[in-house]
Length: 185
View 1: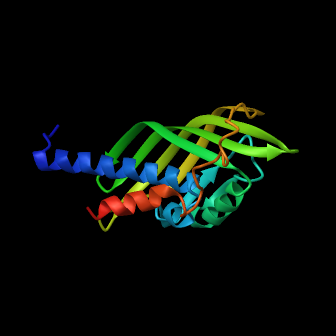
View 2: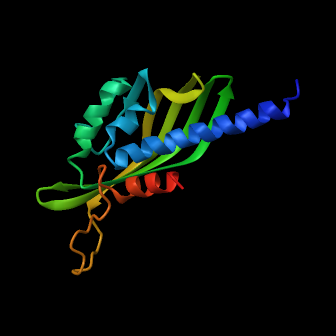
View 3: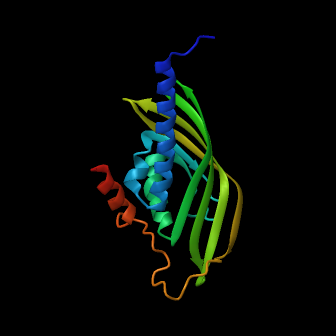
């Protein structure tokens, strides 16, 4: 077994960090309904394999990831709010290729027959990733859900709140201006 040089170790740390950021950007793309950001996470020839146990009519796919993006964005318009969390990230590097597993926790608020519903899902993502021209992107993503809850929404909002969904699901979200403004400093 050969010892890795300090430069190789630093490169592996850098690659893992780049892959983690890619996964977080993908989650953000869903919550902000940012199709351009979502596409930027996949290589053009990538495959997305996704089944949703709560909204299978909105989010079922096994084909080209770039073609999945507009379908995913269209599906998310039926929801009032979403939040995706990625954790327990395990990355296995092999030069310019990598595999990874993460846990995913997804929260969706939709409406059925005039009643707000919460769909909460827990599962895992499996990734195959590749670095091309010094940039990591996904070649393949498989989503497997292990559990879900679907119930009437339980949120309690003050009567003084005019818009209970303050966070926006598009480019008008304050975080876009915040991030851009602070990049320039």
